Every structure is written in structure tokens, then in C-alpha cells.
Length: 313
Image (cartoon, rainbow, N blue to C red; front, side):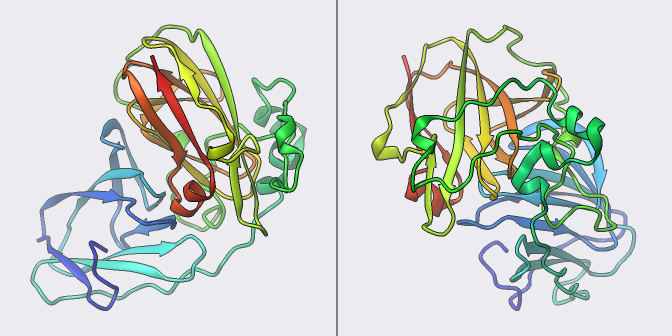
């Protein structure tokens, strides 16, 4: 945490009666962290630097490139552990909030690893009951996979992706704590650009887990043509995850306005974590002329080819 190992115990002074704002930055190379402060509620007030309607939770997941601003109220003069366990439960980062230097609190045990569920592979087809499946498939039309997805570089295709945003993700479901999901994040301002999109671009997040090949629409960066946005245009970008991994997708230079499953404005972010077998929609205003990167923020995925150049002109 802030460059210090768990044994080094990064610390900050926080005294009884104080209200503290913490900014969490997903600065890891390729790790999702599940963050909580046992004994304290976390009031999320911002994501990716954009204000949201405050929401109180016990825990949140943060991916590479994401940021969250959180308010905590310190009720007494004792130490509290900031605990951030990796998603695969192989380790953790930790720090301490305390009224005096040198104090520390109990560090929780790592949660047990949790295997992926059917919903992480089959999407909406695995959501419980007909009503759940139909709810997860709202707004969907027939899924089209690029012909480049049918090759040795792609080991999975999802024909019925889930659209819901209210899932905190693998390893956090029904863990007994109130866990943040994207459905809880609601921008505290109206959608800045209310125009209807004039172009729709669908991108499939693809790969081969065993061979560690990562791509978009079955093509690595060096095999693909750039994506073109007309300057000033309002564009809908659909991200369809054809893999069992979470991909934090980051478009440089422009904001991404995530849409709810019903098509309404949900939250403005610059990095959107797309869950396994999930399909999300975001609106982008192409207001920044130039050549921009659009990539998975897990460094090894980006370097392996899950990357596109976007040209705004």
C-alpha cells in the first residue's frame, strides 16, 4: 500500500471524531483488490474523479486504473486496519488508520478462494429462473461474433451475456458484507451530453486462457485496424466479454458514460471493469482530437494484444 509491504504497515493519523477522506487508486499491474476497513462503514462519494450520489458499503472491489474516494467517520481512539485482499486470495495489502504513530489493529484472515460460477461462463443463460434470465437479457438482440473469434486465439464465446450491473463479482457474492456494485454508483449530475448516438461500435473482449492470448474481436493490436471516431460525434460503445476474466477497459482522452441495462445514464468513469460473460454499453463524446489508446488495464492483457488505437478526427 503506497509502496509499502504489509509488514511495513503504511499508516496515517486519524483521531476520534474526525471525518477522513481516503482516495483509493488501483495502481497494480494486474490485480483486483477487495477493500474494507473492519469496524468502519465506507461512504463512496466519487469514482474515477467524478462525484456520485453517496452510497455506504462495507467493501468494494477496485481494478487496475480505477479510483474511488471514500469517507470514513472515526468513532474512537483506536487503530483500524485498511485491508485490501487480492481477488484470488493469494495475498493482501494493508495499512492502518490510528490516533498515534506506531499503532496497529488486527489484520483479518484472507477469505477462502471462490471458484467461478456458471454465470461467469454462460452469462444470462445461467441466471436463476426464467424471469432472471429474461431480465439479464433485456435490450439484447442476437449476438454476432466476428469470424476472427473462430480460431486458436479464442477459447470461449458467450452467446447470451448478462447485462445486470448489480453483481459485485466472483468471490464477493453473498459474503455477508454489503459490497459495492456498479448498480450502486450513480453520478450526482445529469448526463453531460444528452444527444442520441449516431454510431454504435461493438467490441468483443477475447482470449485464450491456456495460451495467454488476449485480443479484441479475436485480433491483437498489431493485427487490427484503428477505430475511427468523427470529432464531436456521440458514439455508443458496447463491450462484450467473451472470457471468464474481468477486464478493466480504459479509453484515453474521453469519458465513458456507463449505461444501465434499461439504457439510462448510470455513471461517468474512465475505466470500466467488464465482468465475465457480461455485456455493457457506454456512451462516448469524441471531443478530443488525436490518436488514443483503448485497452485492458491489466498490463499483461494489454501487452498481449487487448488494445486498440482510436483515432478522433
